[in-house]
Image (cartoon, rainbow, N blue to C red; front, side):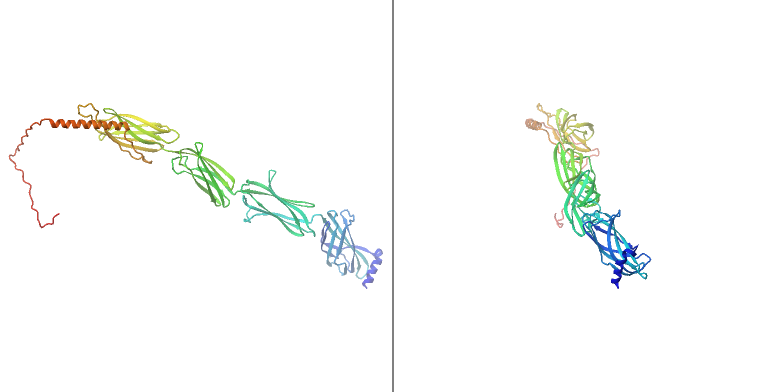
Length: 537
């Protein structure tokens, strides 16, 4: 029966056929030079039911309606029996397009022959299916990136490894060769460029690069460029990223701009860290054009705000300029220069005197200044006896670099101990010297040799300073003193010998003074007999 119907359909097609259109749901995408398979839905959307519908042929037309050759098309089902109104069939297909067919939009026209139910009339059914021909089988996903070991963090630091990747879907049935490239770009220059040949197989492909950011890489905003080239074109991704060390060095300040020799002095380094990081700090201290101190220190800094204390050298006096460099690896993050002055306070180191007249002396003061610049100060002194103050005065003086010798002349009483106190106040430090001296009166001997002099001096430690000592008189003064003492001894010996040889005068005793009360007998001192029974001492 079916064979008879089919034969009848073929015999009467040219005379009795009437045309109607089937409903189509779905579209087809095929790659030029490849094939595509899938399914579409055909629906009897007319008012008639058909006892038999049979696929006859197909053709492909372009947007202008012109037929295009180079396509093949097959369906997994060609005959449909009892196709009721509104009924749909899912039909599998396979379509191929020859290589060289231009990419674009086309229409696949399917033609069927159908016999209506009841009347048995012959109809021509058509279906129009959209077809898109493409040259590139690649479908590109979005560009993704992360920092190795810190997934989920958006910040990129020097020393990090940046992983960049994308998914590429090859919807074709053959491999596609290409080339992938990635680099950073800023101001027209390319950095950290990597390229490699790739083969994109049918299905999902992941193209991944690992970019190691050097420690000495410059901070700033860069454009990440990611390119995949394939035979029919290229796909380019760009994304702006910011790269930095993750540490912002804020400031470096010095505690004291002027300190005394060997006094503690520090600098404060303030910084903000976005991560845990190791930094290297180099310090060079320069004084008088020479490097007097050099050190290198590694510190581990945690995230957050930090203040780092740096010890400064103070073992050399003078103006000191310290250069401080903060490094991450070999990269200099920031450098500073700080200046401070190391001073050594002037010291009243020695007090001496010499006799310049019968009742006059000259006091010689020695003041030492270890700084390379003059220093002003106040010299105060006081000379006094146990009964009164002889001299008291303060002098403003300028002490040159090195040493200063001062000479002060005074008149002092002979034969009376004179005390002195000298103090030097310079750079807010006081040095004190105290002592005493004595000018003896000249000898009563007829000899013309000079009278002897006895001196005694004492010294005290400087206030808030190291102790200092007082020197005696100079070598010549000591020699003169010895000679005077020898001469005095000779005079004394001669004097006593002369006294011995003189005849002694008889001295009459003085009469006893009589008491107005008459005779008075002085009472005897009582005597006590020792008790022998008591223990002896």
